[in-house]
Image (cartoon, rainbow, N blue to C red):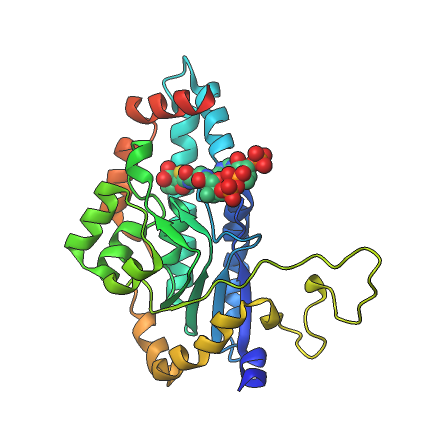
Length: 277
Ligand SMILES: CC[C@@H](C(=O)O)C(=O)SCCNC(=O)CCNC(=O)[C@H](O)C(C)(C)COP(=O)(O)OP(=O)(O)OC[C@H]1O[C@@H](n2cnc3c(N)ncnc32)[C@H](O)[C@@H]1OP(=O)(O)O
């Protein structure tokens, strides 16, 4: 089973550092096209360095705010329009993939990172994970299309509560809400081998010699849970047919309109000014 899984897993990285995450997201459009073939049956989205994804690059937003001073926030607004279009259409493309898609959520999934968790079919949440829709604390609303997707997953009322309260969602709470399909124990932090100690084990970044697809980088608890989760989603062909019905063009216009009303407005600029101090 593990070998089958190894052959099936396509890993799309979501970096914890968000500038890279956005670059990754832009780049993945082409990779998504590659994924359309029959070669892969599962697409796994996971973070790097202990966190899933911490959303938009706050340093860059601070700089854009600085550049906008005296220009009525135009640079910030222009970035917001670009980010909203790019991230929403990229995550819609992820949502529409014919394969079963799974987010392995470890560490922080904040802001846009929380929205990213909603773009897969399934979410596997580690015991050290915290999902937090912090957008309202930044005086904005979801800008990566995650508001409507969250409501689809947990229901409109629970989504309103999560978005309005910005409360951190623990793995247990996520499971209760249906936001987590399963939870797993966070793997113990890797021990660095003593400098003098020789070891035959491959270095973590080398992965498993028998596995070209890098599935060995999945946390062991998640890897054990994945076959159980994915099996009921088969046959993939019927899942693919239902996902093809998700509209690809002009996604989520109401959510985008709400976002573009608040993005770059005075309230967000005040938050960014405080963050820059
Ligand atoms: C529409 C989406 C958009 C929006 O809603 O407006 C957003 O997504 S806004 C961004 C929302 N994200 C956050 O508020 C996350 C803020 N970061 C954190 O809470 C923490 O950094 C963390 C993600 C929980 C990680 O904590 P920890 O493990 O303790 O590490 P550090 O805090 O020391 O972070 C390491 C390093 O990474 C930098 N970092 C983390 N997140 C971001 C980010 N979103 N943008 C830019 N940089 C980020 C952090 O500043 C540290 O950098 P160095 O100090 O240079 O090492």
